[in-house]
Length: 286
Image (cartoon, rainbow, N blue to C red):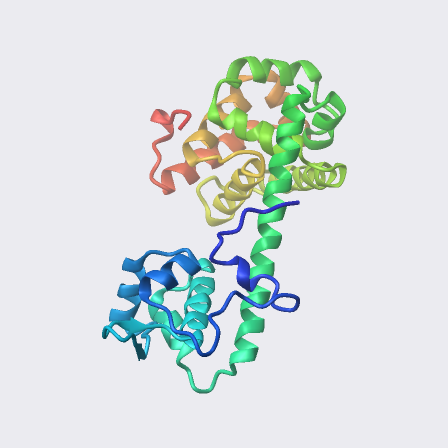
């Protein structure tokens, strides 16, 4: 898979097989020539010079600063660290540390780049799967929904949810995340959900009080579980809690785990939301 990498990074991505386009040792370049060579602005190079990050030591016949091969190599190394998120101050300290072996430092840069490229490839792959699924009009099948939400899940519930929330950003996020889940991912989520609902049932049965530290922890675990499919705020979780009580299908599912669990969970969600600055009575889907 092709990953778009800034041109300024490409010389350093294949250190083992190709050398970066450095200046011949005997040649020196002006700031404009270096800017054109590495793909950054003259203004940036002047700034790096002013903060002692890359200071060319040579001079042209006209008295202007001239960059040597070593200077241009340092520019490339700054660009790599900058692409990895390091501040200019940190980059300077790394490059000027006399205890740091330059070859080891280059290999470390390469390793960090490979890790980042790997993450970008995974993200690009996930987007490709979503685009392919959308092009094919794919959605979660009833079997896939059951693998996530449990054997009691009915296909018409998914259609009802689509009609109710299909235009929302959260539904779009849910579809992007859910449609690319592997069978193993769906199984893992389902098993985690079942285990969490059993833990919630045990808490209710043993007298854990909504608003207590234990109940707040469980409410956060529940919110994190929902958050695997879309970003669930405390306010949104309160809205879900209302459905747990007000929709007999949800309450029947929860109360089968433990009688009265639907109301207990809604109360625990409300108390935890209040603790996090959300008034449950005024909570909306946002």
